[in-house]
Image (tube, rainbow, N blue to C red; front, side):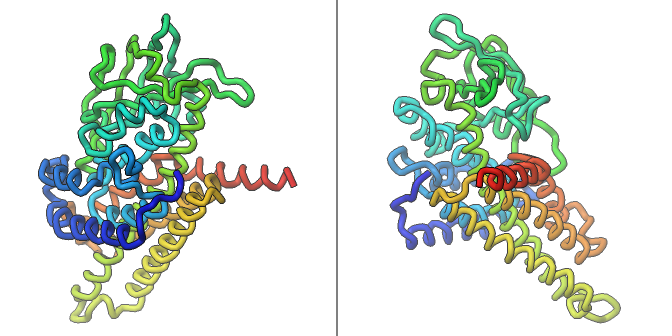
Amino acid sequence: MTHTDVSAADVELIRRQVRDFVRHDVVPRELEIMNGDRIPDDLRATAAAMGLFGYAIPAEWGGLGLDLAQDVELAMELGYTTLALRSMFGTNNGIAGQVLVGFGTDEQREAWLGRIASGEVVAAFALTEPGAGSNPAGLRTRARRRGSDWVLDGQKQFITNATIAELFVVFARVADPSPGDPGIAVFLVPADAAGVTVGPKDVKMGQEGSSTAAVTFQGVAVPADALVGGEVARGYRAAMSSLARGRVHIAALAVGTAQRALDESVAHAAQSTQGGARIGDFQLVQAMLADQQTGVLAGRAMVRETARSFVSGEDRRIAPSAAKLFCTEMVGRVADLAVQVHGGAGYMREVAVERIYRDVRLLRLYEGTSEIQRLIVGGALVRAAGVR
C-alpha cells in the first residue's frame, strides 16, 4: 500500500490500453454478456494477457504494481462498460488480493500471489453472511483449534466469483468480541477443501455476467499456516483496510459508469427529435445533461483526491467512505436521468442506459452500504473532535 515505481508514462500507457480494450472489445459485446450472463472466454483471456488480474499486485509477486491513485484511473475506464467485466478480476486486485499483499506472511504470498496476479487463481473474499454484511463485527462463521489445524464452520452469502474461485479468503470468529478485540481471524481456504460447498449462481437484478453465490463451510480443516499473517489479531485489521481501499475503487467505477451514462444521454439528445425539434435543444433536457456532467466532474475530482490521500497515508478512513457514498449515490442519479433523457426508449431492455440503471443499484450496497458510510464518516468526525 505504498507508492510504486511505476512511472506516470507507464500508467498512462496501461490506461490507454485498458480504455481501448473496454471501448473496442467489450462495449460492442455488452448484450452478449447480458443475455448469456457470462464473460466470454476470449475476453477473459485478453484481460489476463493484459495483466488485469494483477494490476494492483506488487511487481515482485508478478503484478503490475499499481498503487491506489493509479488503480482508480483504470477503474474509471473499466466502469465505462458492464461492471461484470471488472468483477471477474476485481477481487484478485482488491479486497481478496490486498489482504495477502498487506497482511500475508512471505510464505503465503509466495504460494498464492503469483497465481492470483496471472489469473491462474481467482480469489474470493468471503466476509458477508446472512447476519453480517457491512459490519463484520456480526460474523457467525467460527474457527476453532483442533490440534495444529483450524476447523471452520459457517455460511457466507453473495460471495463474488464463488462459482469460479480457487481460493477463499475467509473471515471467521475465533473468540467472542471484547473491548478492542473483535475476535476475528482470516484464513486461506482452497475451494477444493473437504467440507466447502458452493451454492448455485445467484440470479440478480443486474450486473449479468458477474458470478455470486452462497458458500458453506462444514467442518473444513485447514493447517496452521492458513491463518493469514500467522496471527489472529491481523484479521479484523485486514478486513477494515481492504474494505477502505475497495471503497475508493468502487467510487472510481461509479464515476466511469456515470461518464458512460452521460455520453449515452448526450448522444441521444443530439440525435433524437420530438415534434420535429432536436430534444437536445430543449432547455429541460439540457438541465438534465448539466446535472449529469456536474456529478461526473465532482466525482472524478473527489476520487482522485481521495486516492492520493490514501496512498500518502493522510486519510484512509473518512475520505474513502465519503467518496464511496458520494460517487455511488451520484451514479444512481445520473443513471436515472439517463433513462429520463431517453424517454420510453430508456426503459427497453437492450438499451444501454436500462442496463446501467440496474447495474449501478448494487454499488450503494456492497463494500458497505451508503448508511454504513454515513456512520463511518459522522462517527469519525465526532471522535476526532473529542480528542482535541
